[in-house]
Image (cartoon, rainbow, N blue to C red):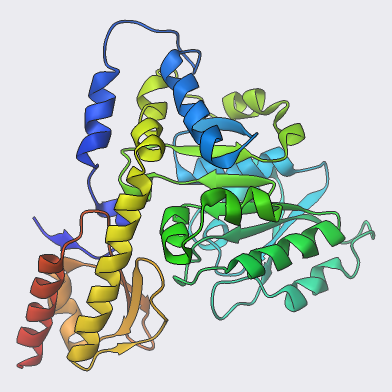
Length: 340
C-alpha cells in the first residue's frame, strides 16, 4: 500500500480511538446524543474550553457550514481570505446552505489581511451591498501558516469594532496549539472567538468534529439547525466517544506533535538534497519545489498534491502515524529518480 504525504485525511485511525469506539459498543443507549458517553465527552471538552456549548457533527464541512449558519443574521455575509477552505475546498456548500456571500480578501500567506478586509465594510450599511457581519479564519491556514495569539487578538478586535462575529476553522487546531505551545482556550475563547470548528478527523479520529460556541447565546436554537442540515447522528455515542481519550488523555497533543515533528524532519531531509522549501514549516505541512521531471514517477509511489503547477510546488502533509522511516524512503526515492 502506498504511503501518503497528500493529506492527514489519508491516514488511518489511532488505535486508542478504535478501542474507545469498541468500548462503547455495548447494549442499547438513548439516541441523538442523550447518552452518558456523549455527556462525558462534552464535559471533557468543557474542561479545556470553559463554559461553552458543544455540538458534534459528522465532518469538517458540516462543522464550518453550521458554525456560520449559527452566526448569521438575515442579511449576513462572511469575510475570509481567498485561500480559505470554505472558499476553495467545500464546493460552495457554505453559500448554498447558509445563503451567505463569501467576501474574499487576497492573501499571500493564508492569513486575513485586515487592511484589505476594510474594503468590504466601506458600504456596510448600504442595502445595495453585502452586509459583512462574520469573519472566518483558519488555524492552521491552507498555506500551513499559523496565526500567533497576537494576530488572533487583532482579528478579534477588528471584528468587535465592526460588530462582527468571529469563526475559527480549527480542522488542524491541534497542530497549531502544539506549535504555539498554548492551550486551545488561550487561542480561542480567551481571544474573543465566538464559534470554533474543533477538528479531530485530520488528527487520528475516525470521523466527526465538534462545534464549540463560546458565545452561548448563539447556540440557543442550534439543536434545530443541526437536525435541519443533516448533521445529527442517531448513534451519537460512537462519534462523541472518540473525543473522550482525544481530550482527556491528551491524545490530540501526542498525534499533532508527531505530525509536526515529522514535518520538520521532512523539511530538513529535503533541504539536504537541495530541494527548495517555499513556506516556513510551522505545523504538519511542507511546501516544496520539486524538479518537474520526477513528479509523475514519484506520484506512482507516493500520494501528494501539486499545489502550484506553474512553480512545480507541491504540498506534503504529515500525519499522526507518519514516521522517519516514511520520510527516509521518500527521500531515497527522490534521490533515485534524480540519479543521485
